[in-house]
Length: 456
Length: 154
Image (cartoon, rainbow over all chains, first blue to last red; front, side):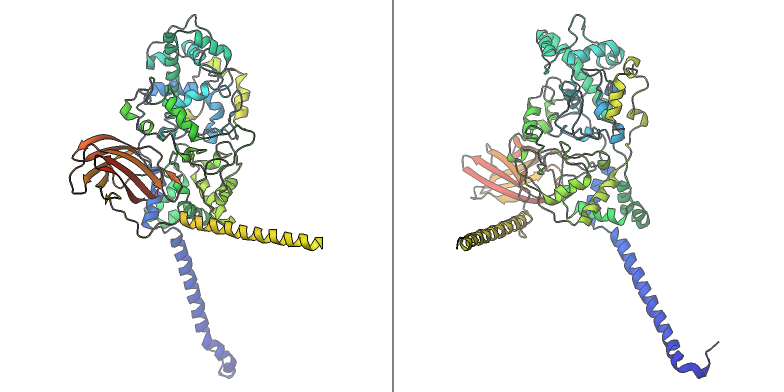
């Protein structure tokens, strides 16, 4: 029904303008929609160079597991089985209570949730993960080992970690793992009549015992010790990171699937990712699919007053060159030409001073506290440090202040949390093997400490 | 009297403090700008004469584009200024990131002479993207000279 002509004057005005108003409203709505659509598609729109960077960070860019020429047993499943048992066996310690798994807990991305590692004593460094280390030319925060097997040997003879000695471990292998060992590595030496402990360690008794052995006996014992490391390394090679929300997001963006991309990462997470690969400069060091360049950088991390001076790579570089367990050493299975990283190692240079290895950021939300001595409790503190870029306590920090806002720092943290994912390793390899010799697994005295270490 | 004297001293100290602070801020800003500055006219040539013109040096990486985080080799080709292949030269290698205050993660070395003025450089590795320089010092009977190559890695 049309309105009556009599009351047309005021209302006609209204009526005649209504389409205009409606039109304007519709236009505004359309503009709004267009803007939000544009914002939405812009949110996930990356330049070709940015997309290449995203793809370089994605797990899909991870090359196949590289061979370790220094470990001839690295890909032997029987060695990995043995290594799996050894990794969880607390008898590989001076007090029978410390296994590799005491500090490398599967539920915490094979770290321990503590600022400093705690074995039979307390170390001066934070426990690093062992996940994905098959890809790393250097192990430990200072790279003082150059293979997974030589890394594994370090804590076993450290007086504050496992606190044992190589002769003690050789006896354990002969007593408990002889069949498994000999199937892979060949006959065990005759250890009867040798002392219970012995090795080039801090403990004076074990050291004196070691020095009482002939060079030939020392060599036989060291060979068993080295093979313990090689078996553990064969197991650790299987510990690999799994696909995270970030990886799925990159796949969606690469496929042009905006809807899937939008469902995978929130606006803040995408903004954080943009900062991560751009303004914040994180990919200078945290690059590649494992989010680490595996090299060494001084980022001005504060020194802990309760710990001795730590020169980082400056000492680590010298130690790996001198190590009897390095790639060029007598226990390595590699040809010298395979040891390129060690042969061309940089041992001198101001940039080595207090430089530490950037850890992988995969599962970083699960692996705090952070930095080489657990200096920061939270990711927020870490990001604040990078934003502030304080002077290094020794050497020179490579950082420059970023000047990011609180919101941007929160976005970076939100992005880092998208890197969490269960490992791409069969579940049975993440827990103590069912057939671990009962005398070890059932050692009730050992369990409480290991459980406490889990931070449960 | 003494109060006035003290306050003058205090003012001087304060002024000096402000000036020192301003100079410090300026230095930090200039330093920061300097660190983030990549020259527009960066010469990205892979063949260059050495600084004093004694030699001409070319490089060819074993992989292109030059990889990040992967140890690889470079082949250098050295000629005399008049284009004759240079043999029996001693070449030393160094590299740097002008904006980052650090160099190469490795110590590359010339390990082999391949003939025809070509030299194998082993142990080359770059640990991040950005502006890099590689410096070569060439020594032979003709004298010592050096060359710097610039390149930008993604």
